[in-house]
Image (cartoon, rainbow, N blue to C red; front, side, top):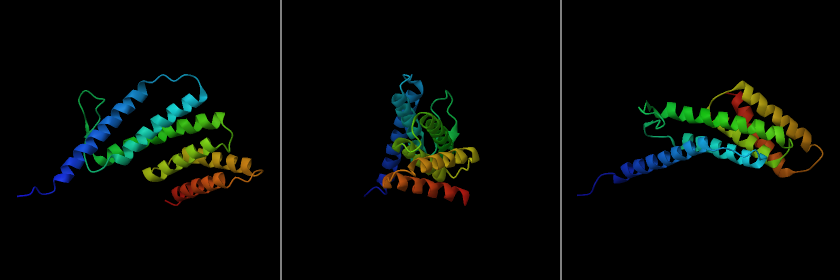
Length: 171
């Protein structure tokens, strides 16, 4: 006699292993001391923000607990996902501010960070007026810097970012 649906339980175990491994990665990133080199700092901020974004994306279909606590507190999938999205938004906001302070307004890396930030805002369903205003300000500065050049790739990124930001305003 065949087992009924053995794959879902195996998939759940695999999913838990992936999330647990990513939590270890997140904890390791929180312990890192960053050298005061611009691109090292930006790479570190990217890795940290991406780890939380990834955790938010993979948190589905199971209840997990925060393993950083001695007595784990169970979270529902929804609240854990919101928690990880909040951390991703916070870390991407830090990254955006750092990049804006050091890179040209139309820098490809800055636009990529801004694109991801707007995507996370849309995915998370959270409306943060201050963060949206910072994103809009950065888009404005990038558009102004691009007025004298003809860079289709960067213009497309800006269109995607503006579309994401507009979808936030329509919710």
